[in-house]
Length: 212
Ligand code: MN3
Image (cartoon, rainbow, N blue to C red):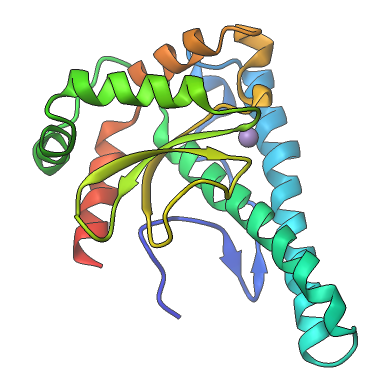
């Protein structure tokens, strides 16, 4: 089946945890190695396992091994855990230990066209990230209707986003993503995230989306 701009682990019928695209310690000074390893090896891995378990349950319903009553809860769990898998894959590809880059080319054009300016984008991104209630994400992606970039404050991994939304980069604002270093200072983490976005990879994803 067709794959998308997301480099998300799926092989031989199973969701799989991809390796980090860099050494865990290389995200300094944005994030410390312990946070990154726990986040990837424990949290992201748990979403992969949860997505496979939910998909297995649905398969067993489909072939008659389980009653249909098991399907709604499995579908809910699949939405949560697959959402977690997708967004974490995107998160790892969104950040870099380097800083000081700026969006270029078609990505700079898309940001200016969608938000008026880089400042306008950052203002909305920060406010949405700070406004996520409980655990969730601030995610920038393409609205498939207008072609504009939009920012959603996704709660948990799957609530509050428009169907068909094509995520481009994502900031995890679950506390496990930042608490060891930033404690309760989510704003400090979000500000640091904005300085450590991998704009080059983000631009490559945008180019892929535009050709899908
Ligand atoms: Mn997380």
